[in-house]
Length: 299
Image (cartoon, rainbow, N blue to C red; front, side):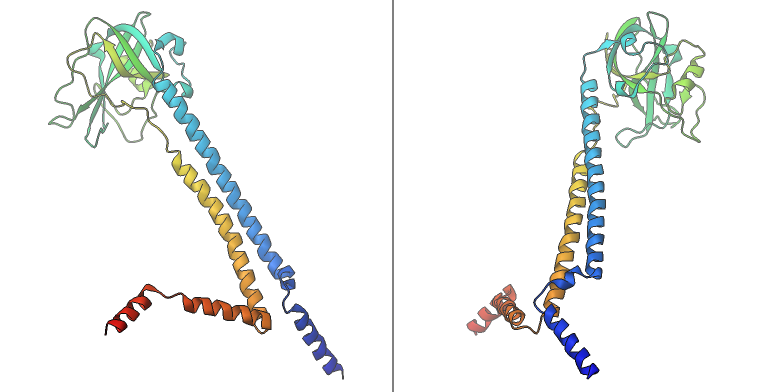
């Protein structure tokens, strides 16, 4: 009698589950839901991070553009002393008048441009207050000996007014050395030691934009357009993480529906729905089915 009663209880419980979603509130499915929510939160955080990165890139691009096309200001207005420089000043256009110290000119080694090896030409400009401001006049190709260019266009003689864009002193690169009137990078402390004077701007140097008087020939300018960061890449990653979160919930819903159908596959209602789905699948003919029918008809 007791065995028969237990059987009836099991049958009653199974019948009670038929057509219901009670199983979705089981510990197993609540665990799946918790995992999907945690995954969605993680994706949301990563998406928000990419959005923040995109805003940072947009702000950086706006600052670069503003500085790059800014009206030139006196050098001493931007650099209050020889070591002054802030990252937000990069690409700012400055104007300074002086004379080039052509005999103190330096070459920066290993500076490729458009895929070709070469050098950048650093010419100190002696300003009215006696300090030396380093001007990167541009790029020249490697010569036949590879250790030096065949020709470096001369800087203008006499008083010259220079408009240049500020750039920070570069770090050293381990293993890159240079001798004589050459340097491995535009590390202004090293440039200062080569010039053997204390009156050198070491916070920033200038990429030549224009100069008056302008010589007949000049080194090739290395930068003519403002460099920008790719904002679109961050947007695509942001959307990608949102899609991943949605996929997690869609996957959970699909798995839940699949189990519901399996649990209720013997009920009349679910059998009717399964038959309807089968009928619709049978009505969907593929292109190959249509082609086969046309071929058979042509015979």
